[in-house]
Image 1: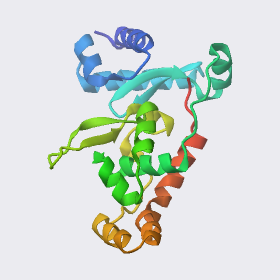
Image 2: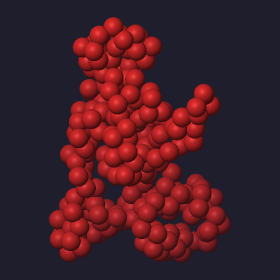
Image 3: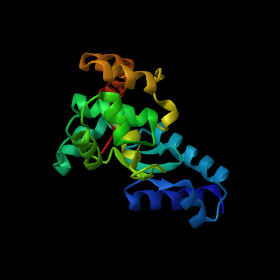
Length: 211
């Protein structure tokens, strides 16, 4: 199959899907090897950018999605009468930061690191489709593991988790001991993640995605 025909097929699939489609799935349908398919997708992305089209192809790790250009979001939103998703509260952003950097992880880990109950924040992030369940931890009680989703990458303008801003991870054991000594020491357990919180918020504010 030549590149032009493969490009047409991929365009049609992404347009009809309306959500991320994995490279593996596209290769299976088109009977193409991953390297060739990624090359074709890159050509499409460059073509859309060069011609300043109203749509673009977004890469999310090893998946692809067609969406509108960022600068056209006001017109698309107005036409479809959609609303911007609610912004994350400080507690939700803090919870999301921990999950993003330590994933897959449990709610108990988040709560021990933050020093407060995080049930509401985890539930809110699930409803906003920024995190999802990722199996269970092989430990007593088999707690649920959580990880970020493609919507998380799209919201913060990332192609993959490797693009997360660098952050010195908290020493969990030390943080737990300090938090046990006094409630005021919670800042010491969470302070090191403030850089991650601020960086994620900067991504959210500065890279609002298309609709």
